[in-house]
Amino acid sequence: MTSLNIYSDGGCSGNQSERNFGGWGAILEFGEHKKELYGGEADTTNNRMELTAVISAFQALKRDGLSVRVFTDSSYVADCFRKKWYVSWEKNGWVNASKKPVENKELWMQLLSHTRRHDVTFYRVKGHVSVEKLTETKSAELYRKFKEWNGEDFSYGDFLYITAMNNRADELANAGIKTVKESAAAL
Image (cartoon, rainbow, N blue to C red; front, side, top):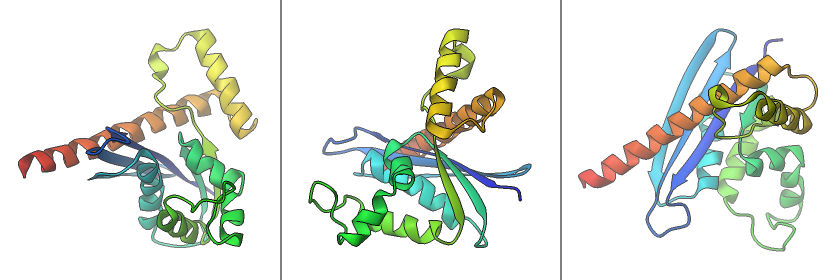
């Protein structure tokens, strides 16, 4: 079965400041078919944009029961699923290990409802890596880290391609930030 790949990224210009602009980008890839999505919002956080990128990608799917691979540079998103944090959160009434309410609960609940309709695996990608500018040593080091995070099933070519797609998702997130900034300036 061919997997649907989702490459996602979110960002926030001025994260944690009083006035900021966030953006998200996602690429859906099924065989030779690709669809790019992006958007943004004001007064948000980086983590909200990372979640929104993945949620928006799932919202674009037309059917359930797909085999989906999500590639993200967000350890926040990837670790939740890889380490199954959400199981404890749900069991404990959406309270985290520090006995505090889980941040972004409504987004996590939305994402969980989407992932439960598919066979989903999350993978971690190192963000903001300019593949063209890497030395051979640095490239080999990043590939080793990628395999440490995701297992041995990925070739070096896979690593380079996935990294390039993550960079494109980052560009889309930046387009989302730009759109929101321009809208705010026009007001």
